[in-house]
Image (cartoon, rainbow over all chains, first blue to last red; front, side, top):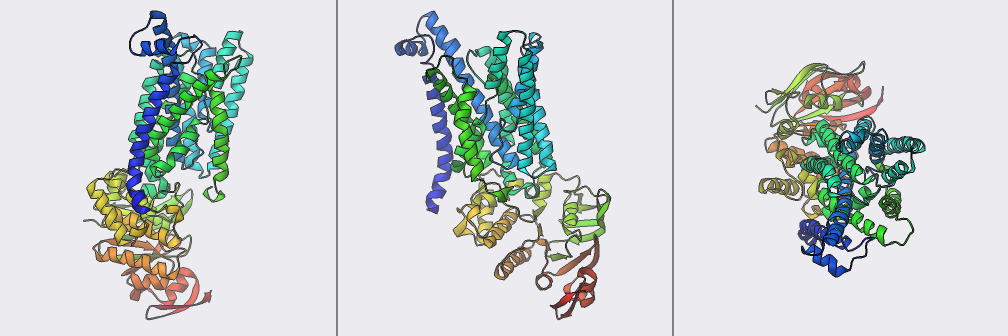
Length: 339
Length: 253
């Protein structure tokens, strides 16, 4: 058994990453076959291999593929942020959605939309979302220094979420016309419908930067397994670790909110499923969590289009329907001793 | 020059003085026990001398350099620190937890370099954990966990070790086992400063005892020099007698 485990664990980790990456590519390609415009699969294949007519190319390259890629990127950013925040706060329930980071980012983004700030530059929207996310993560990290209780941290997250939700509702109440109301609802619920390469381009650099920061400081998250005191004992610079994880998770979450709105729970579900395969090590869970969360959202977004409803379901709703039960289940598995 | 030297170290929290003008030296080859009642400031003294707390007065040097200016990585390579144990956040394997002791050498879990893997293996063998190396840490008994944390500290292969109550809540056999492990570390040329509450075990294992009371070091010397009935009375407020380093406690004063 132990010999098997010794042989298996490293292979599982790299096999998992490879398998997930392959599944992501497959899911994104599959998503290109689905859409509101009827297009036979033979035509889609023709387009994917560089053929097809202009109209068909437009549908696949400019509508379907960007949508699938956006779903993947939003998921990946949330999955990695979730895994990193869980490592930092040493708790499997930490996640951008639950901690109110997504809601705060979404509020900041809505503000910039409502007051027309986005007219100045297309960078305003992602930057506003990122500032919102950073403000929330910084507040949580400060609270984490003062209290060791994860319950307190999650309650602060609940407070942030409620506050952001109330202000968002207020802005919706004041919405000047049905179109901006519908825009805001999109932000609140989370959706990647009608995203183009341009919007992806404005979010991607921040996601990449955030991911790079999280990956380069992953080792510190492993050390935090020991607790903060022992982690400083083995040589971790706690202050620097906190700042960088907050910064990385804030950038990635903010950019994902800018691209897809507030989508919850995926940052809990993916790391939770990945952890047993990577020896429960926060650092090794970062990449597989990102891939799995991306995969989940691409599949959920396929589901959004397949479920026969009059109005298309929002991606955030589907993600919550899948994720909330798992969140409750993880919470119920926790023993009181860890708090 | 690998010694840890604290000079007139003081530490305050708000207005309360936790440590007052404490001076001591820890050198390789020494087994030093830090004794004192709860709240005497033992942990605060350790944290301040490691540079984990900014002292309100005095200072500490490690290998001739001020601990306040040492980077955490450099400090961890010179001195391993085993704080009072807290539960692990995740159910990692024993080998991975021991490998975290190599953090200061740049080791990343799951892809250890040869030098790191060898150091981890040596520590695992030294602490008799080979048969447990692939077990999940949350399935270990208290004694096995204590050995795992010792192995983690040894894996750093730092010349000095500071351990805060490493044998708290262990059965007598495991208390001996852990102290034997630390003794072996000292025999191999290491220097250890260990917080203990068992005075007799401290006298038996340590070459020097540091006695603390109300934030001050009240005595520092060999067990025969410093362990006597008056000391028990002064430091712990207990009546007792000492005969050839055997302590008999009669009761509180």
